Image 1 (cartoon, rainbow, N blue to C red):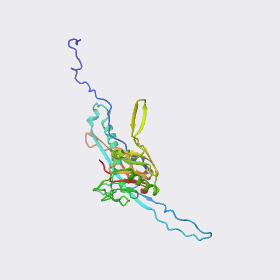
Image 2 (cartoon, one colour):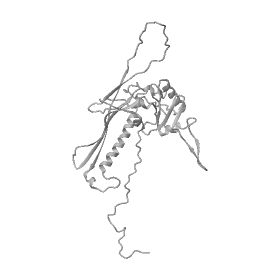
Image 3 (tube, one colour):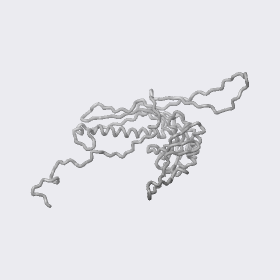
Length: 318
């Protein structure tokens, strides 16, 4: 078969729109489990403060009839605080761009604004996990919140050389081990779980990297379960959704934003995210032939009682 003479086919045509899908596939991770699972509260100042307290240890308590009552010595609550951190991202799009016929999105400014908002969520999650001390900031230095490692002191396992706990009030970071990192294993994990239980905590979530998750899959009694899916089809399933210990049942949650050397064992209701300014999409003043939008959030991290949480730190990462 042949074309009739002078057929004007698609090879000759000019101006045909490219066959570009109207769906943009973004594989970038958006999960922020620590921020999502933490309780939410409102901050009313750039230094958000709270108080912690604890019960005294149990003691013998028996008295004779008619005995005079003597009041026990009481301890004051502990006052803690963390600074709010400003998370800000902006996008500038030339006004010409709004007139173009684009594949995958109707308006470039809307698409890019949504994208930076998602990226900002990841920045917030990273800050909550960062080994960072709080900073008050000034006219030339940004305020910074103290991340989770700066609060944990009671139930920790870390390197024996330089590794050290912080003071636990957010004013300084953990001291990382640099000489000898230690493999994450079941004995270290169970030891911290026991310590948390002895201190009255009930942790429910472990946040850890993919590398450390693979280590956890080797914990006794929780992997290599065989399941006959169909006749003649046998698969090996590695599963560690929930880990049962004498000190409680806990869920393992892989996280992309915490350092691989850190494994956090958390009681989620003992953490709060205190927001001074909720995430807002703001159109900035025009200064030229373009449109500028800003996404801004201001918040901080609250550790309501660090003794209910713990960490296995200074782990090998390869």
